[in-house]
Length: 134
Image 1: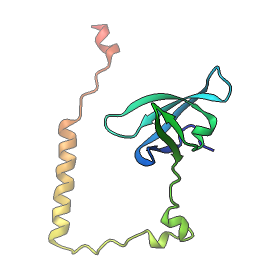
Image 2: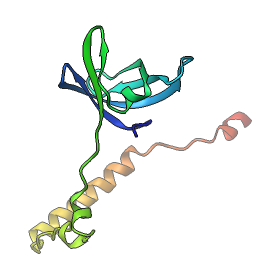
Image 3: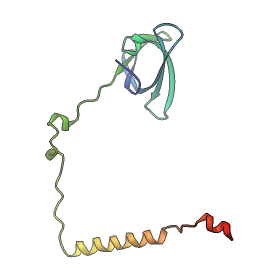
Image 4: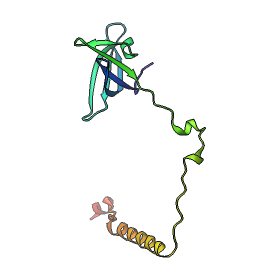
């Protein structure tokens, strides 16, 4: 069942044209009809509201201006870690050993520079209450 926050693929004349996320589904005054607000996942982002039957939201073909349209719910493929039984050994990569000497001095200089730059740019804290007493 397609519902709010689901991503759908919009077909126009049996060709996929765009992805959209369902933002809102509100019942219409006619039975089995709904106002479906879609966030088009393209640039620029746009919201549009279509009035659709419940069967159209579920993927049945309908027409708009005489053109065939269809919504298809997008189901994300399972992640690779879920397929491997959530074994973290496959995901974690070892970092190469760091050479001693010059590399250590360079990293120490960088950390000193970053500490200096933080001290230099830190803003002064001023109490408004103290300023009001003057």
